[in-house]
Length: 345
Image (cartoon, rainbow, N blue to C red; front, top):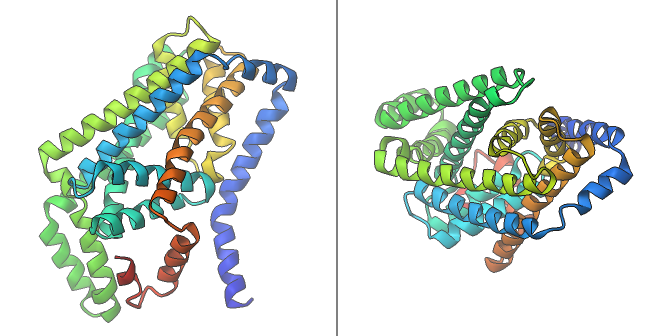
């Protein structure tokens, strides 16, 4: 097999399992659903609640911008944080393997001067906080969700892993100098390690310093919690459209299960998995299948629309090239032993 053919096949093997999971999820969903009833359920969302939910989702994105800016030590403006985070979400919806996270690291690394590896560590922290919040929401609402005991071990395992990861990252940040010396010793016999590995890992360690600064940590946590509260409220507003008597904890549970579910590898935008997980959670709460699927489709559209508008606006605003971005990433992967990456930083 030629070099290009081998590279293409390797890339395909990376994203193919996720695509297959999405295809299976979509097949099961639409096999079980009744199309006439599903279309009727979708029309029920055309109400003022949809406008309110869209407004809340935009506010939630704003709080994410403030959270990420705080993680970056305020080395970026709010506009930069807000638009770049939405650009990343947009690219996650268009490309496999969470490509949007790499895009965020490159874009913000250029905009702030911090470098992509430093920025990437803040994205890792943000995702860790999100997983902890998702697991917490499931555990809080689980006693109220009859027949959902299967979710408890999943939530506990996720929360445990996240806490362990945060402790590990905190120790790495707290003993930054010790870890650096250890890395330098390991790489001392390798010119490539000294030139490539040590600077990159050093930048990653620098990006973890938020964990060692109580005030910065608390402010970050505040904005992230607020973004989750607003997004849960968005779910509640939409749930009231289909179930006027739905309690607030339904939205808490649905959002927590959804966040844990979309962590499963899938096609871009978690297509199929998003709908399957969210519809599954609601049907266990007693919502009819067609209504639950319609709700999941509308929530996915809402998420895609709000992040897509601001993400596309950001790309146009900054005259960013998607093809150029991925060419840079591919070039860095192929030439990790060269100094090509310094041009991006």
